[in-house]
Length: 236
Image 1 (spheres, rainbow, N blue to C red):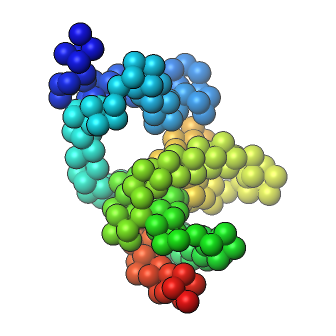
Image 2: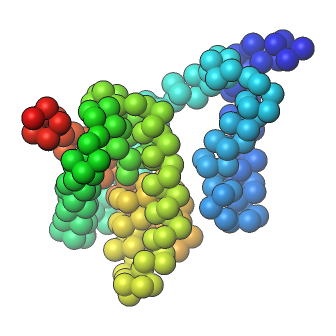
């Protein structure tokens, strides 16, 4: 009976949609990090697969339909950019400088960890794109030869921590400007940070959504530099 249900294209697809939808409703009622739809759906799907002893390959029969949407999801980010371009025109020096410096600092920190903990090329490539939205992170990780599953896990952890810790850091550092807060959440915690930014205010949300796109572009531009860093520190 289990095989009849799971060995179909609909099983993985329906399980994914149901888990995400349930997480969305729970998060609307109880806005705790554990109920963030992406986090909750991952935990629920893994639990179902483990409890009912279902192979991951079986889940992917239908789950691959969701995976195919990553490319159009990347393209659709242009809509967010177009809707918020007025903020970019007005505050572009601060926005571009903040995102640019943040992306470069992130690259240097990952390189430092690579040297200290002797990461190999696969781990380095997987870590590099952890602070950008999933659609772009997966593409960059694949192009650099990283491990897609590890990159996805790191993206989720980074987004969750950023969304939870971000507002606390704003209070500790007395950062009250909505533009600065939005840029920080969007560039550091991607979609999850943007969800938190929307809760803080409309300007926060708009700036965070814009920052997701610009941060992704910055990392795409920095990606070739990582190959030089790999040659410098890994292959020396």
